[in-house]
Image (cartoon, rainbow, N blue to C red; front, side):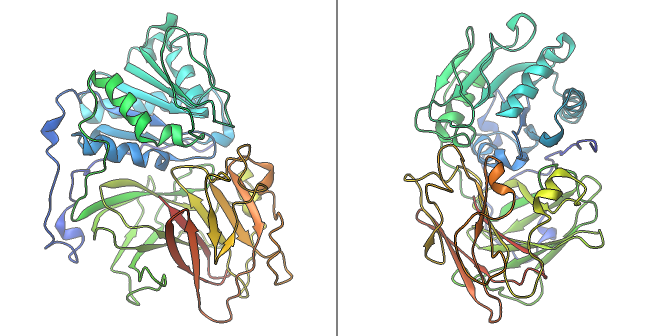
Length: 437
C-alpha cells in the first residue's frame, strides 16, 4: 500500500488569494469572525470509513468553520480502507505529528467514522499516541467495551443509529453516548444533530449555528486521488468550467481556471462564484488513464475537501472493480454519487432522465447505496438490471442504463427535490460523475 499522504488545510480562510481567480476578485467578501471560537486551540483530525475519502467530512468542516474555527484547524486523514492493517495506525500517528507541528498545538481532537472508528481505537490503544489526543468521537462504528485509550483514559463520545443497516451500533459503557434514530450509516457522520453533539462535547457549549454561513466569493480546493485506495495523483490536470445549470453545458470553450495537482495530490485553493454550477475535468499524468468529468452542485461556503477521484490501475482491487466500465463512442458511463446520505427507499427518490433508480433492489437499507454506476451492457437498451461487480459491495450499485451519445444531450439527475443536469459525454472520452453534495 502506498503511504497515505498528509493533507494540510492551509489557506482556508474565508477567501483565497484574489490573484488566483480574477473572475471573482471584485466580489464582496463576507468572512466569518474567526474570533468567535475561543476554545478551538485543539485541531480536529477526522478519519473516514470503508471505501470513503476525506470528503466525507466536508459538511462538518463547513459547520466547524461556520462556528469560528479557522480552516487550518480542521484536518481529514486519507487512508486505504481496502488494505487495512496495523500500518494505518502508524500512518495516522505520523499524520497527527504533522498536524501538531503545523498548528503548534500539543494535542488534537480525533474523530472516526465506521471502519475509521476501528482505526481510532487501535491508534488510541497505545499510551504515547493517546497522550496526543484530547478527546475522541466514535461515529457509526462497532461498539466497544469502554472509552478509548489505555484504561478508557480518553474522553469518548459515541454516536450511533439503530437505523444504520451497515454497523450494529450500541452504547459504550463509560462513554458519552448519543443514539440518533432515523439516520443511515452516512448521516451519522454528516448530520447537523451529530455535529451539534460533537461541538458541545469538545467545547461544553452548543454551536452558535447549525447553518452553513454563505460567503462571496467561495474558496474551494481539494485532492485528486484514486477511487477506493486514495493514492494521490501527481501532476493531474484539473480544468474548471462554469456551467449552464439548466443543460450542464459549458458557458465557455476554455476553462476559466486550470490547476495541476502537487506531489500530495492537492489542487487549489481558488475562489468561485456562489451557487454557480461547475464541471471539473480531470486528466491524470498517466498514459492510458481515463478522464473523469465531475458535475457538482453550487458552492456556498469554504470547501477544501473537493475530492476528484480517478480510476485506479487494473492491478488493484478497486481497479478490477472498475475495469469493466465501457470505453466506446456510443454511450455515456455515469456515476451518480450522494455525498451526505444513502439513497434509501421509500424515504428517498433518485431519478435519472425521469426513470426511478431508487427501487427496493438498489436502494434498500441493507445496500445503503451512495454510488450508482449506470451504463449499458451492450444491447443499447435500458433494462435496469444489475451490471458489473458493484452489487457485491455495500454502498455501490451497478445498473443497466443506456445513454446514447450520437446527439449531444442533457442527462437529468434528480435526488429528492434536488436537480443536477450533466452532459452525455461518450465513454471513450471519459466517465461522467454527478455529485449531490
